[in-house]
Image (cartoon, rainbow, N blue to C red):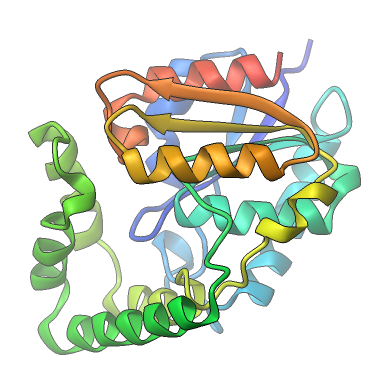
Length: 251
């Protein structure tokens, strides 16, 4: 029998390859399709980098994923930035989405002052990236408190992925796909037709709180998976646990 299909969306600075270890751990239980989002990987030079354009790209990917899945619908999974985009995708195409799995992600910023502050912060980050280059940017990003407690190998892999990216593409992604640029969908989760699963690391206190709120807002909360001894970088730290959550949700 054909395996269920997961359309897996990566986070900022990553690429579809960010999901490789998860796909390997999942084996033949699901088929993971992980495209590169604009500004990243093979799509680094695609413009414009904004939500509307990315959702247009992903609509085609989702249609193909759903068509090749036994149920005629696909699971949408998203890590961090990819989760925010994935929620927009699922809300726009309810007939094609079987489940949504958010990994270390949010529904976006709802407070307009916070959104404006984040846009200003991301603009400053983008300008520093363009001025100082990828190596310096990767050093700064890898030193963020968000990664505190991550194993050295996971942090090194995360930094290496950033440093291997495209400076112009990542700057465009900061401006067009950052948390301040992408509209929040928290108030719309009551209309989300698909069951929602949240996967978070036990050390990732901020995102555990966010995930719990998302499940309270969701029309069909499917549950929370808390990965022991893990932080924010779950695709690198605990790919087997993420794979288990995906295969369970695709059950």
